[in-house]
Amino acid sequence: MTQPSDKALVPFVSVDNMMRLVHHIGVEQIITQIAAQIESDFKRWESFDKTPRIPAHSPHGVIELMPTSDGEAYGFKYVNGHPKNTSEGLQTVTAFGLLADVYTGYPTLLTEMTLLTALRTAATSALVGSYLAPKAAKTMAMIGNGAQSEFQCLAFRAMCDIDTVRLYDTDPNATRKCAANLKNSGLTVVQCTTAEDAIEGAHIITTCTADKKNATILTDNMIGPGIHINAIGGDCPGKTELHKDILLRSDIFVEYPEQTRIEGEIQALPADHTVTEIWQVMTGQAKGRQDDRQVTLFDSVGFAIEDFSALRYIKSAIEGTDFYEPLDMLTDPDDPRDLYGMLMRAG
Image (cartoon, rainbow, N blue to C red; front, side, top):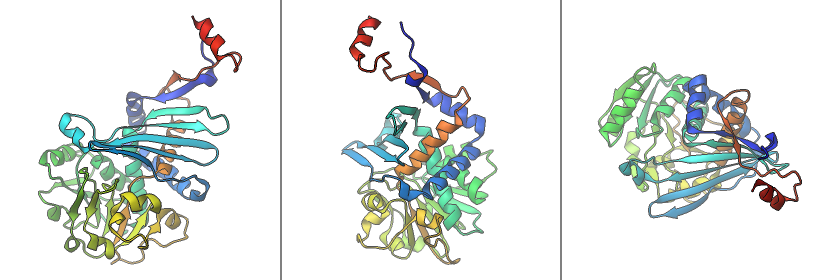
């Protein structure tokens, strides 16, 4: 049987190989490197095609496609969000992604993105935190101690120099799990029994809860001056984490307003409420944190350019390594017009 040529083989990064790659580079190092790629791509924001993600909602959860292109490469991520999965022993979020060459249309990378999404979300959070969080901040409250919590804590340690995390989840087992996983991280870990306890002394608050509902994880009286809120749990219509009054006295920063107004915390505000796009802060076109008493809010819902950056990073990181396998997923007939002949010869 004719063997496929190299041009028909697509690098595939399995879950096993993604874990091997992360261990080879180091968790904090790979987060920092993905953040650098995201920052680089955000600084050329205007070169990308941009569209809100394409959702298919059901009573059970949501399945979404997140596409973008810079004219040279095209990327998309398939991702689901099913909060009920945890009770069935399944992941709330799973994902895979693809990168392709715009010139030929041929895929150049296929990879798992469940782990990679956690890494890129943490990278984005800490990258934005490096622009918006108080420079003297050393303590972060991590409210919601599920699958992404450890990545968030390590990202802020690596990129924003926090040394203490205060953990809270409505499920004490989740808090114990997170604390155990961070035991040897170099962070001081404090397990808390209420959200109010968790935010004590914290100048950065990350909220990352999974319930698909309008929740009030933080109320207005809990937020003092000088706080940076990293709200990453709201990611679909009807799902929020913050009381509206917090939004009204915060300077709000978003990825892509057209998507965030549908899915983020600001879905609770009028459509003309002023927000700042974070790429504008990174390019110097807009101001970030301006004083020590300012309350800043990163209303993050995740955007396709972040996934594009992560895919580009992985494609580069695996070159010359064995952290992938060549996948025979493209037909390669000797005569491009003779697809049927190739099929018959294989028989």
